[in-house]
Length: 322
Image 1: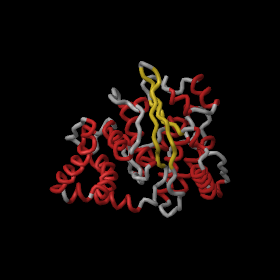
Image 2: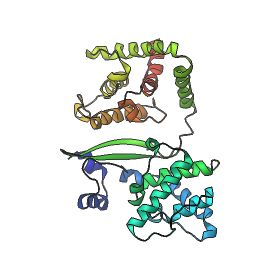
Image 3: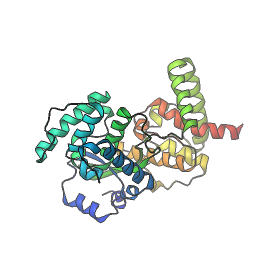
Image 4: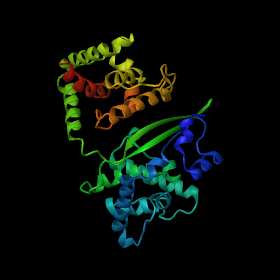
């Protein structure tokens, strides 16, 4: 078993529940907020804000929410909330007492939310099963999405992020990967947003310059990891496992990378994600990465995502070298 799994679940009740119940079926993945992140002030602020917002909204219905996990899983509060905010009439009973009825009710609610918010299935950060299972991360993502759609001027607490652990059952046992996930927008990253806009413009409006930028970044990387006997020629494929990104960061920032802390020859997506997450953490700790990055984009070879990360290092050390 991955030791990180036991380290992450420091609360006995959480660990006991996982070990005694069939929480995750074989081949299934589950993403959870780490117990160490559950008590962060920003997360508590967001939870309290959402509870107070729901209670204000549903005051005339005499509904009082005290816990997001315990009071929303059966669909009753979500039903009232959608009817109040969006004047939606859902073809389902408001009160569902059995798990079967609750699952059916949530299915109708989730379908209405997806249609109303015009989301694709791949964009959903919640599901019927996760809400029914009282999953806090899914519940928060759902409520934030509803709030942003129906009340765009609502001043949600910004920059709320949590450390997550993704658990997957495989034929060889449990595998885990760690990440940092934003629940509300990081509005402080004005500079980072301008960089994003620059790369968006590069890809959409100046594709003729794209190869030149790629070449400059690759030459920069090759110059530094070449000292380790490595050659870098392709952005999409050679950065997806996180190894070169880790070695490059170590070279430039002077980090000593213990070979036991990452996978030098990753053999699975989980191991690749571990490497990428570690590299992103190092960049963030060094003050080089001040905007959220989806580690899965890097693993999937997303050119724009990889170039944005590389530019963080390039912009700092190109100036020094000049």
